[in-house]
Length: 133
Image (cartoon, rainbow, N blue to C red; front, side):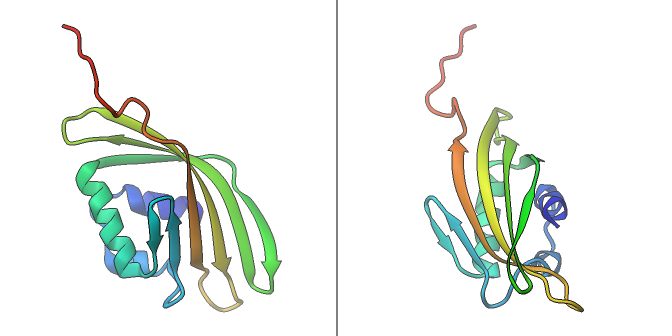
């Protein structure tokens, strides 16, 4: 599920219906350092803003640890790199940690209830740059 999620986020076009299959409704929550997104539509808006700043994004996910935290509830923890090119073609790398709460009941597709994202390494070198010719 984690890998399928990031493959979807890497895609050049994002189908709302495909994205919605991953997200719990109405309980979805995406907690970021800069605020909280509380619905699939707010998540799509956040993702659209990210994609307008960085049109090309690639994710590299590390090992995923999954623990049961209740009946039908699982917590997935992992770190990943987000490699992106901005509109000018300049590369940016960010390291993030995600903690997901996933609901997976028999006979139902698993859905993400909550994503908690914490920056480990924000896009380094993205401030003023000196270019020597």
